[in-house]
Structure formats: C-alpha cells, structure tokens
Image 1: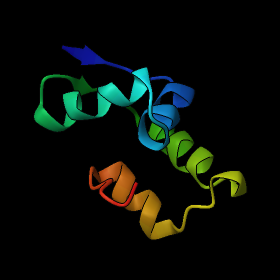
Image 2: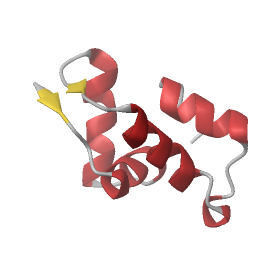
Image 3: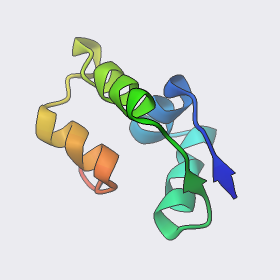
Image 4: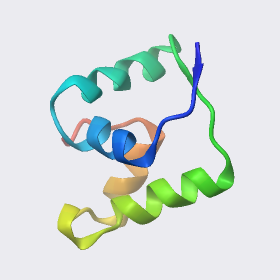
Length: 71
C-alpha cells in the first residue's frame, strides 16, 4: 500500500502513543510505502523542530530515518 501522510498525522505517529503510532511499524516493515516529495519532507522536519517538541537535530534525524528507539 502506498500512502501520503499528513504532517500532523506523521508527527503524532512519531512522537505520541495512540492510534497513529501504529503506522510506524507498517512503514518500517515495508507493509506500507510512504510517498513524499522534498517539500513534504521539509515540512516534516520543520514541524518536528518546533521548540514545543524539544527535539535535538539528531533526534529528529533518527525519527525520520526510522530509529525511534529513544522515544
């Protein structure tokens, strides 16, 4: 299955427990293929850098690259 994930849904999936967090293992296992453009990726990165999330650049990178073991 190929999907485009809204930024708010992506942030919720990566940072919070709940229904959206169930998406993470789907794309990590390859069950779901994320479709994104450079612009969408830039928006994910910009939003994850908001001060309210208190994420360092290396934490954001690990989230985007799929290593979210620190969460």
